[in-house]
Structures are given as C-alpha cells and as structure tokens.
Amino acid sequence: MRGAKEAQSEGCRLEQYDVVLDEIEATNVAVESANPGDLVVVCVDRARAVWDELQVLGNRAQAGAADEFDDP
Image 1 (cartoon, rainbow, N blue to C red):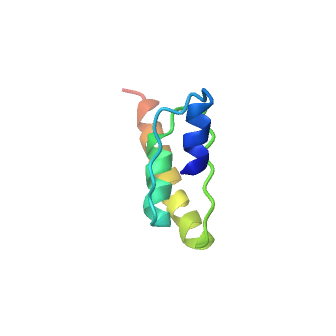
Image 2 (spheres, helix red, strand yellow):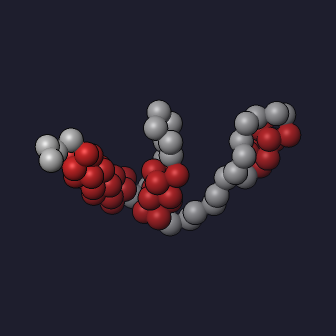
C-alpha cells in the first residue's frame, strides 16, 4: 500500500486500490474491475489455482461474447 500511496501523492492517476488477501478472490476482483484494454497483473503463490480460475473466467467471457454474434 505504501507504493500506491506514494504514487498518488506524486500525481499518479490512481483513484482506488483494494487489498484482497485471498489469491482467487483477488484474481476475480482484478479481472472483473478491469476495463477493456487494461493490463491486469497478479503476483501469486498458488499459480495453478489462479490459472484454473482464469480459465473459468475466460470460458465464461467467451460464452457471453458468442451470444452477441448469434443470428436472430
């Protein structure tokens, strides 16, 4: 948090940051709060569990995107 507070005080466009200690929950929060074109970086210890969660999120996003392009 100290780095984020320093960046804010130096004029960084950081509006908000959250501290989420559970890696799976943190991954979900980061991905769900990202805007199109954002780069999301997560540093984790439980890499396989986070990878599996990202696969679930990716499959969910692809399934939702397919609905937009279905012919009426």
